[in-house]
Image 1 (cartoon, rainbow, N blue to C red):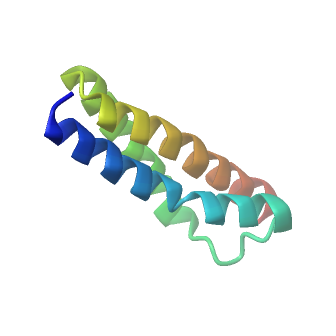
Image 2 (image 1 turned 45 degrees about the vertical axis):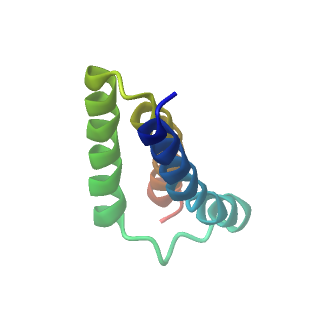
Length: 84
């Protein structure tokens, strides 16, 4: 694996892990008042596009990070829609 891959995986781990506390808090409390529907909608679409981009390039750090982030962000978005 190249150095650039290690950097990509490190960046992916940190940025993806940053969503875990928000997701856990939202799942536990079901409090979505502070979550912007417009922002999370745009974010989920953006992450989906990054995932497709990574797949097209075969860039696995991008694919893995965005697949996990997409799952977390989509779950938060679904809770926003359900509990608003």
